[in-house]
Image 1 (tube, rainbow, N blue to C red):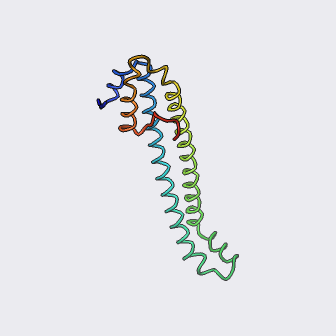
Image 2: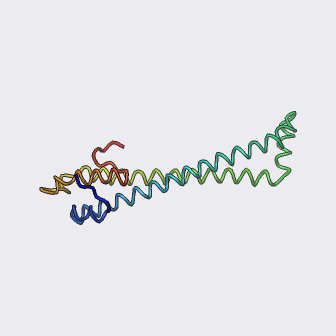
Image 3: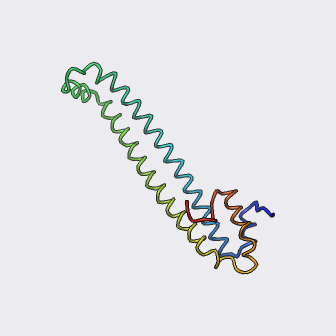
Amino acid sequence: MKEINEINEINEITDRATGQMLTNLIEKKRKFDQLKKQHHFALWVTAVGCTIFLYYLTHTVIGPHAYSAASMITAFVSKSLHLYAFLAVAGMAGATKIFYQRKEKAEKEFHALRCEIIDRSKDLWKEEAWMNRHIVFETMKKQYDINLFHEAK
C-alpha cells in the first residue's frame, strides 16, 4: 500500500478542487489545535493565578481578620495591590473565556468542512480516483489526525 508524505502528493492523486478542500481542512485543523493549546494555557494560568491570589488573601486578609467581615473588607480595600491582583485574576478568567469561544468557533468550522468532504466524497472521487481515496483518507488520519472515514467526532 502506498503512503503519502506531503500534501503535494495528495494533490497529485486528487483533482485541484479536492486538493484545495483538503488543504483548507488541514489549515483549519492546525488553527483549531493552536487555539486549543492557547485555551489550555490560559486555563492553567488562570487556575494558578487564582490559587496564588486566594492563598495570599487567606494569609494576609482572611486569617488575621477572621473575627469580623467588616474588618476583612477594610483590610482588603486598604491596599491597592489587592484590587489590582483581583482585577488581574478576573482579566485572566475573561481571557480564558475568549480563548474558549475562539476554540469552539474554530472547531465548528473544522468539523463542518470535514463533514462536507465526507458527504461529498462520492462527487469528489469519481471513477478511478474512488479506488485511491482510502490512501488519502489514511494519510489524513495518520499525518494530520483528521478522520474522513466517519462524520462522528
